[in-house]
Image (tube, rainbow over all chains, first blue to last red; front, side):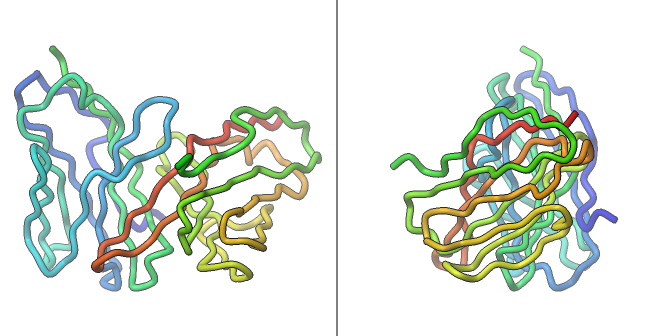
Length: 112
Length: 114
């Protein structure tokens, strides 16, 4: 049973468009929510992360929106570029931050 | 800094064989973890360590052993390989700064069990 549910499984966006990936969780003990970007043949790399005490965090073209009451969070990629084409994973961690639970991943393809 | 290194990059095993996946980090991170990545499943935590001499189980620990004798190294042992252990294995190390947790992943080991 996956503790973090991620959708969609795949996403095609035109260059310059907005990519939106959603995640949902049930465990209210989770208090740290990172997003990772993974290119083929590489390990995941931390992109951006948020704690539940804020509703939004922005870093460049990447924004996390967080809805604590709905237990949902999402990644928005503004002005999507072909170089953003990768697989994106959301994750969640409880107070013991060594235990990260990952979503199933979203493969993003940004068309030129 | 080399970051997190993993060896080997690829490995083929026969059912029943044992082997050790190596992981090392040179960032002096206290925390290290092993994940497996399977299509459609994301990454699942196998074992993790909060420091030298301290390890604990993750979501999918069966069939794997770990030890942490030094801060730098965190090997993963497959005791008796099974086809269900065919996967890509990632090692990660992490630290905490200002309440934020930075987790760094190695390049992965692709394991096939026949």
